[in-house]
Length: 252
Image: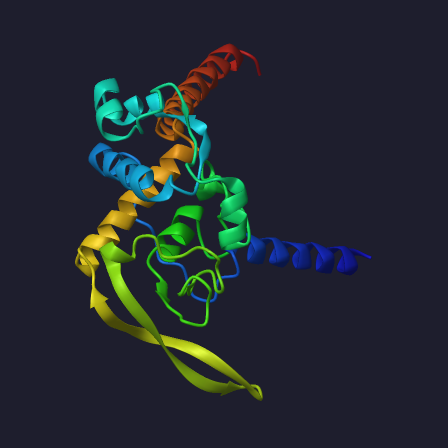
């Protein structure tokens, strides 16, 4: 019975990991940690509003919360708000959900906690997103004209292609256990983007850093508080140990 329970638990864990990973076929790259870099978070917020918010909402995040990453209310109004939005509004997509479903086959998901929900056996949610945003390639067999190595057959087009340029993925066909498989070998740049590959990777690191921050804006405070609590407990343990020794020293 124990073996059966263990096997079921292992199977459920594998299924959950595969689901969280979005059906990945490649190893995830480690995302740079940008949680304490205010300039990177501000640039990530700009990229999110200009390129992601057209289709994806962040319904649990308000614009005025961006003051936590160093932006003033006036900067938010001047640079990140659409004409009809208010600084106290939540980040809602401009696209009509019905049209989105017709165009992409499904309504684009809310991105407020996407960096937390996409964690899997391949790494953190930030690792997945960092890999995903950097592995789009041209695929004329798809309705959108794009495909993705981290999420094969994804319905989302490459909205940042002007920054990265157009690329083609190079695959090699191999025979494994009697089956033909396509193995990714590298990239072929078709047209250049407005950013160099290094600049694009940096921009995606900023965007992913912002998505990670948005999923838990208080994460840095939580870590600092956790360290303070651990130091307090260590100090209290020392005091308790010395009091205990003093109390029992004359008792034999």
